[in-house]
Image 1 (cartoon, rainbow over the protein chains, first blue to last red):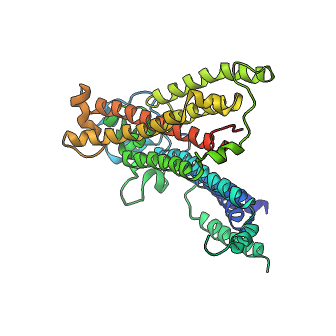
Image 2 (cartoon, one colour):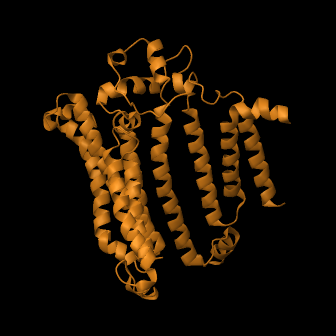
Image 3 (cartoon, rainbow over the protein chains, first blue to last red):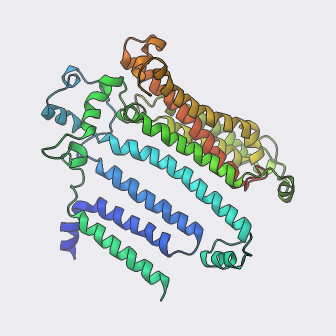
Length: 144
Length: 263
């Protein structure tokens, strides 16, 4: 067990955490009966994706992708791929950061829409439990 | 059969398949992984180009800002439109202006940041904190170039300051400072600013969002500085939309679309 943990889990712990978080979110999306709990599952699922992307951009010993000192001429011209790679090793990959930066704010906006829908559903049916909702919707007359 | 049994089964199988694939993934923090360096024998990763060339293309030290607002300007523009659309969706779903529904809501307790002694600690704290939060929000927007920050983050901080007004006193108080008319106008204005920075280069005969040509308008030394200033303009547009829409979401959700009473 310890062997398995050290050899398999530890080198890839970021992926393990993302898979576990994602499955927690997926389970609550599928199995939970309450719509608010489903939305919470959606948020957890989204957090797992964000964690996955950001962990992909990590480089050992690198700093944030903000140039502290303005690079001199060496990096200016389109240098050979080897030297360009050496310079880039000092900075974390900016692309996942860019993607997740917008994803977080869009996630908040979609969460807002989901909560607004829930409020409207609650106003209409007085419940957020899925089975009760289905029962009440079936009980509605056809022409509504 | 219990439906939760099938849910657990699906989750366990999916999780197992995903974890099985993990062993093929690049190691954590590996600078040679495909995402960081590109596929072996194939083309190098775009991130290498960004890190090496972003400063020379835009004069922006923060690579994330340069990629966000220049290289991936299209993406960011439509993310802004998504946020705007989400705000409009909430407006369409919740906002009710019918008189009969408004009458149901109880009149709010008389309280504001200035009056009401029951809330004097909260009121005074908000009064001290809110200006600092707003200045910090403006700082984050303006300093997206040389340091971590930008329109999305600064917009969220500014929205938080208005939400703090609503929490510290009540929603009417926040709306008297940032009314519905204002936030809807600012949200549209943000999108229009961004789209305007896209259309301006087209007017000057270049591609959509190709800021470099704006040096003729900004009278800068070269296309790099024109990009630098355009990125700031675009960030301000993003910040306006994010700030307005996040506050709109809070105001509509907390008052069930009546914009009365609230929390």
